[in-house]
Length: 332
Image 1 (cartoon, one colour):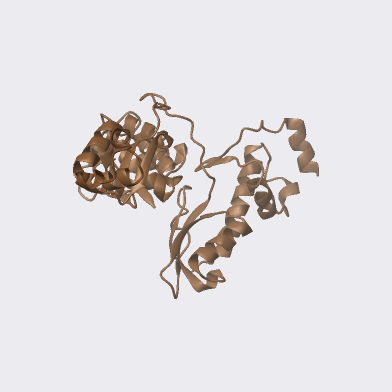
Image 2 (cartoon, rainbow, N blue to C red):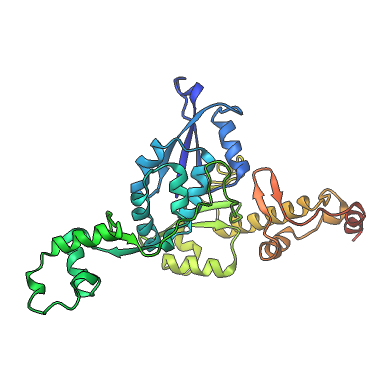
């Protein structure tokens, strides 16, 4: 789980000041709320410290490139969508860029398909051996077979590395496979982000096994079955909740770790359904909603409209209900 701790510059020397931590990726309103909790007023300076499970090769880079919270959040979103192979490729790509600024770190995440990663190739000699074995060096093709054993593998590897502008990473060798470079981020306006909606983010630890996972709620029955399979268990009674997080203010400390996953999931669907209706202009205090099944409605909406949840409500692309529609809904 990737996190940052936010420190207001004017408060850093105050006794007992600890800043505010935030799980990434998250929503714009959650970031604004975290800044306020950290004592950062609008327009004031702040600093970020990476905590949690970030890739090792990014810690020093991100803490020295003067990134904003919004920039780090976008990068966290791109990282959260990467497979392990893509993450290994990304490490090589950022070593290849001339300037390791936050702009280039973000744009590098959009250019992974232009690079090739070869795992476990850790030096020039190993690269030379693989290149000769797979006939990857045009200048030494068609040599007599008895000549190849006389070649220096390290020299061949150096040649291939220079020709391909490759780099060695902590996991292997990375080089360009195609030309070109896209720049979705110009350093001024961030690309549009699409966030997965959730009310709770819970860390589950299997009781009799070492497996653990993070689960976003609300979640479907299919996702529930997948998480149980990942933990190697049959029911959530065979695991324990070790941590509960939420982008909504005050929700993280509202429940103890004895609460059941099913209870949190039902509550998440209920809150989701209420926020979807409220965002559409419905008056939830009306008589029509006294016995309304918000949980079922939330389950349905999660699979259809997917409005963006924020700490203060929901944002949807759908237009709000007209006054006449709202009155009709209340009468129903």
